[in-house]
Image (cartoon, rainbow, N blue to C red; front, side, top):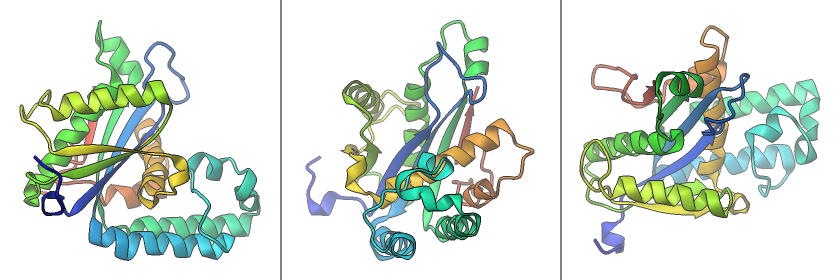
Length: 250
């Protein structure tokens, strides 16, 4: 299919992860891998999401060139050192929660318990490949319900390194070429973006991936961020999240 303005879909998909997909060395403190897909209408992204994130940054930095990153917020350094001041940190985190609460997006999260996967299967699947396949299948099905299945949809991921990017693109192409449970090709175009691109969608995806992982690790622990995120997970017509917006393996 030729990529013409008429063939572009009305949606964007942003992808980020939490944890790593290495099964040889598993961190006992964080033995999960999460791949998160954030689906947004382009009109909402331009008119609300980018605008609101810029306003948030202007409030705390006076400019919008800062790139939000979950790790730097959790362990402040550099431009985030002001978060060591409790009143400012509380105001900042409350503002982030409000940003995510108002986010006009549908989420698909694939969560992999690496310890259970490595224990259960003699030759376990590659966690990243499996998460990409399971996630893209659900993204496609969701876009199909919006009558976008024949239109080109950009799937935007952050560059991680030459080897990692090549592996990601290979897994992505394989799934989109038909190696998926639906046995059909997906009209998705992978777009590799650098952190310096200051993508609002990637920054928000980065902020939402870890709370999902923490909920999987410690489901009884209070997790306000996850409570907000959970309300945006894709659901069945009857409100079911499991298998729809949240896929857990094994």
